[in-house]
Length: 83
Image (cartoon, rainbow, N blue to C red; front, side, top):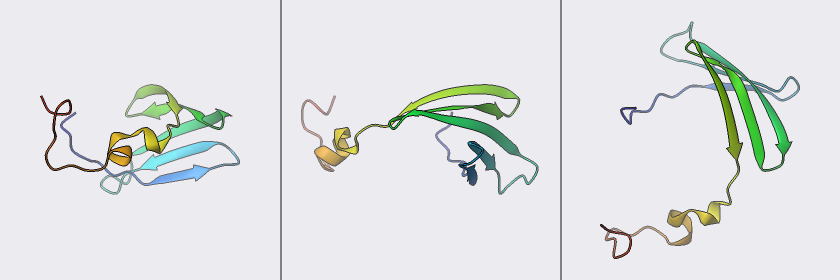
């Protein structure tokens, strides 16, 4: 959690509902997930990465709800957006 980015190429198999992440830096590293789409705006991912078991529930959000989209970018933040 040091705010660094670690790109991981992904392979998605829609037929088998799998997602595999790999690493350009370590050719032996791999993370395998299965996914389900119970609704058009929901997705669940289950799998293992680095010896840890993961269960993720994702919800699609309307991009217009994000402040950067609906308010625009401002160099100077005025109240109530600044502390």
